[in-house]
Length: 471
Ligand code: ADP
Ligand code: MG
Image (cartoon, rainbow, N blue to C red):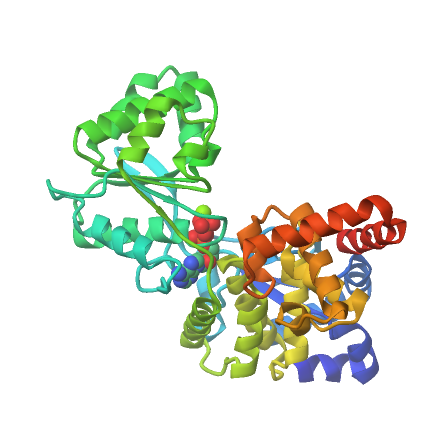
């Protein structure tokens, strides 16, 4: 593809405009490519869309349409903005399933993963991702307990003596709650084909309930839950609305009293969900609460390796070198979504350009993922980067044990900014600043805070750093 683009547009045009093109996905007959800025997107769109589409058609059988979009964080999850379509090239309407016209070697795992739904009594659950199984779930310190309990729950769903009911999983975003819920659902369906499984996000529950009330079907709504063997509720923190919550409480109580398995995932433990009333809270707390912790580097590396392996089953020519994997594992510290996003990006870039995946390319992708564009949320990783650049000390020095003032100062300012600008707790900040104790972080914050009062230069400096971080 790279050679084709070069040949078609010439070395110069290629070098100026196409280097930043990234391949995002093929969905049905549409190829989506992205560029990092609105300017580049418009430029490619207006000058090179037709030629680019022709190259894509030649390379990917079955492609008929091209979308040029501005890259944003999360594009790998299917969110796109500012999509612009190339001409009226589409000749036939898209038919679901037609994607299979694209031969297996060309089928790429893009934004739209394969999905299925659970269904009880004609009541449709939320989509289940075929990829989220126990087999594809990588075990590490952060999640081994949650994983063990989840497998146990799946194995004993129909067992009178099931132990963990309800099971309540919680963690920060992107650490595998949804993955585990889907894995339980798939496993139950596999082991007990007759079992009635329903997986629902809290949002879908609410939507279905509101619909039922609107069409005066509230009784039938409750009835549908009767037959359920296992109810899996995702994103409980989004359960909203007084009536909905009451209904939810009734249903959960009825299921638990009837000895049916309930599994709940939430961003917060029950004690910290204001939406939950006291009865529900204590009912949840009587079950088993487990938290998935932050991933350590070892787990991040293993997840990356697994993702690469999965891609290799479709395209064995794809691979990432050990230094690339290590760099990704070191820097993508936030959650599993980033890890998945990075591998997707690199894979798609490989599909498009067939050029070696260099550390430099990986750096750009990391910057993209870590910075994100929207919503603008500052991460400890950004702070480390900006502080290190501003004070011209290396990131490694900031994280090290060195006590020279030239290092201590930026380190303290970094911790101060982390406390002010992120939602991380003191122990978390300590961990990210080279495994320091939370009292060290507290000391740093107090020191900077105190000094800010009578040192206007420091104040300006911090303001400047904040500006850079918000850019
Ligand atoms: P949550 O529901 O906690 O926000 P998800 O289950 O959506 O998180 O996980 C985010 C991404 O990270 C998914 O792509 C998921 O497959 C991946 N992921 C998380 N934990 C693991 C793990 N232990 N092994 C493999 N992939 C994981
Ligand atoms: Mg989730």
